[in-house]
Structure formats: C-alpha cells, structure tokens
Length: 331
Ligand SMILES: NC(=O)c1ccc[n+]([C@@H]2O[C@H](COP(=O)([O-])OP(=O)(O)OC[C@H]3O[C@@H](n4cnc5c(N)ncnc54)[C@H](O)[C@@H]3O)[C@@H](O)[C@H]2O)c1
Image 1 (cartoon, rainbow, N blue to C red):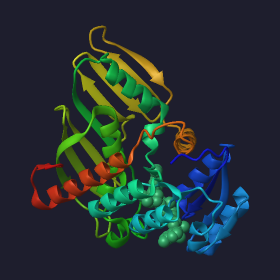
Image 2 (cartoon, rainbow, N blue to C red; image 1 turned 45 degrees about the vertical axis):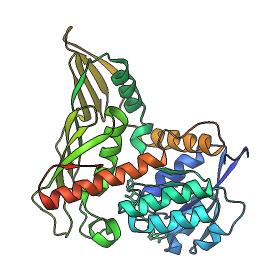
Image 3 (cartoon, rainbow, N blue to C red; image 1 turned 90 degrees about the vertical axis):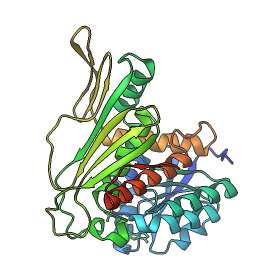
Image 4 (cartoon, rainbow, N blue to C red; image 1 turned 180 degrees about the vertical axis):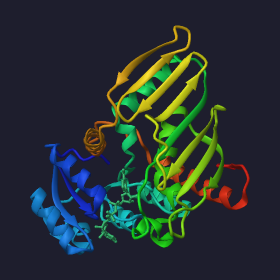
C-alpha cells in the first residue's frame, strides 16, 4: 500500500561502514527525514545521531514500535537481515535492506511471502542499478546498438583484509567473497543481460587466514544464452579500468570506475558515455527511488523477486563450488 505522505520518516539500523553513505544520501533528499538510528553498539548510534540530527537507540524495538516511522534501512551484517526485515514488516514498515538480502533462499522466500501479506515494500539495496553509467549501459543493450549480446564479464576484486571482520565469520556473513561482492555482481548481470539460468563456481586459492573463500570465479549462462564470467576477490586487484564488459556482435560496452565507453565494431571507434562510478550519487538515486516507491509514484526497479533471485543464484553457486559441477539455478 503506498504512503501518500509528503515526508517519509525513516530509521536506519546498523550504523557501521555502509550506513555512513546511506546517512549522507538521506541528508540530501529533503522528502526523507531521518527519525532514528539504531545499533547494538550504542556509541555508533550516538555518533550517527549527532552527525545527522536524529535520535538514537540501542534497542530495535523502539524503531518497530514507533508509529511515526514509515520505513527502515537495514545495514546490519547479513545474518541479522531476515529477522530485522520480518519484524519491520510485521510492524508495518517498508524496508530497504543491504545486500546480501539473506544468507539462504528459505529466508528470502519467507520474506517475499510476508511482504505480500503485509502489503509493505521490501527492496534489496543494489547500488549498481542506480549508477548512471550502468543505467546507460542497459539502454544500449536494449537498443540493439551492439548487436546480439554474446558474452559478458564482471570484475569486483580489491584487496581488503577480512581477517578481523564479520565478513570472514561464516555464521554472520553466510559465506565469503562469493556472497559478498557476488551479490552485487549477480544483480548487475541480471539487470543488464537478463536472468541467470545456470552457474559453475570455483573458490580460488586462499591467501587470507580466514575460513571462507577470499577469491572466487563464477561462470554463468543466462536464459537468453549469454555466457559470462564474474571474478571476485578480497585478496587481489585485477587492476582493470572496467567492472563490467558486455560483448555483442556489433560492439562492446565497457562500464568503468572512471569512465564508460561503447566501442563500435564496424567503425572501430569508441565513444565515452559516462563519467564513472559515483558512489554517493548512486545512493541518492537509490533512496529517491525507494521514496518514490513508498509514495506510490514508481514501481520498484528491483522487486522482491529480484532480491530472492539474487539469493537463489548465490546459493546455487555455493552448491556448485561444493559439487564441482554446472547447476541450473531454477528447476
Ligand atoms: N552496498 C555496498 O556497497 C555495501 C558495502 C559494504 C557493506 N554492505 C552491506 O551492508 C551491511 C553492513 O556492512 P558494513 O560493511 O557496513 O558492516 P559494519 O560492520 O561496518 O557495520 C555493521 C554495523 O551493524 C551493527 N550491528 C551488528 N549487529 C546488529 C544488529 N543485530 N542490529 C543492529 N545493528 C547491528 C554493528 O555494530 C555495526 O555498527 C552488510 O550486509 C554488507 O554486506 C554493502
């Protein structure tokens, strides 16, 4: 049910690293008012509340009980997402939840049911869908300007020491780099070249002293027979200018960190079409879109089925790592 209110009153749960970008983005969107922040570490909540002029609490109940709050943004580590989303929905709040949506498919499917029953919006945060260059790239793909899409690749590799972070604790994270950076990659592939039909995944040589994989490669095929590969790592830089390449019969689209371009195979010329990855802009676009959806002005470009599907693909990828074979994502 859309909210006709002019101002969306929002609360943020989990005031750690990524929350800082959400908070800054919220502060730039006048129709979204930050009402409350919560963290199990009170000091983190207090710091955020002071900086962004809201109230704070250590107890999530205070958010769920507060009738003034229309929506919550969940930025706690992955294992907590399912319970927080369910409690928010039952309390009548709309939800924007960070990736990975959940750590297993069963939880994601239960949330989808509850979202339908409560008639409240649940969106997975997926910043790349809100990056201008990625949106332009999708338009090029759909226009046919690079011909039939045949191959695609995504690269999310950078050196991050995870030895003392929750990311390397399987119970909290649900897995290593495959679920972490992989959730972004899978969603961006689905957005750009369509649903993923089958996967084959490998965990790479481990170089950090952690129990989860720190490097992984995911091979995929889409429903439309686009084949491709995703490289993911916390332990190396591939040092490439682009994080997405899409190859068609008439050209190539390169989505880059600093700029993006389209290459015309007939003319053998490139044209720059974007100025790269602008993180804060993407988060502002994301919160604007979330507000539009809450107010009934737009349908989510990332529906609950997209969130569930991203979990389904990652879960299949982990099964593939264990069984060392190609797997169909859906029966
Ligand atoms: N979109 C992105 O680019 C991006 C980047 C980094 C992280 N993330 C995702 O955001 C989420 C948070 O990651 P992070 O890097 O900010 O982690 P973080 O460790 O920096 O912050 C997490 C915060 O949540 C708090 N917390 C822990 N358990 C909680 C609970 N049950 N209730 C409330 N607060 C709780 C912690 O005290 C901490 O302050 C994860 O799901 C992660 O995958 C997304």
